[in-house]
Image 1 (cartoon, rainbow, N blue to C red):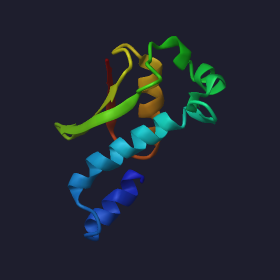
Image 2 (cartoon, rainbow, N blue to C red):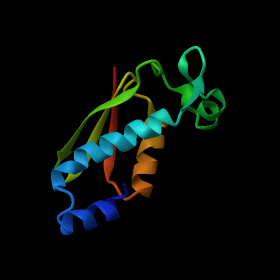
Image 3 (tube, rainbow, N blue to C red):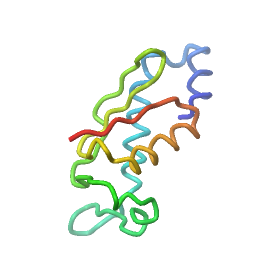
Image 4 (cartoon, rainbow, N blue to C red):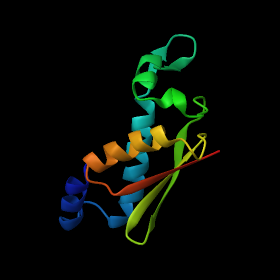
Amino acid sequence: MKKKEFDRFVRLGLRRKEDAKKIIQSLVNWLITSLYVPDKDLIKAVNEELIQKLSLDMDAINWGDLKCFEVEELDGRWIAYVDEADPTAYNLRRYLQSWLTKWGWDVEVITEW
């Protein structure tokens, strides 16, 4: 859900401001899931072509358990914590933040092991 839509739903009483945490977490995890392709043996496998195109192969990432596990609001800005990636995983953070920004969300992504 885009931020503009979310704000409208809050004004109409259809959403609560607190719902933003779950929406952001869901968007981040959806973006992570989009980096995989279905696999008959593994259920999902990393989309190697896409990973290279986004330069994510340059980042240290545990693709087996990559996920957003927490979102918090800090000084009017959202922080999304992604587990199983090196804190220096610049390309992953850039990929996630750029899409969130396009959707109107002001989110900093922090990666950690």
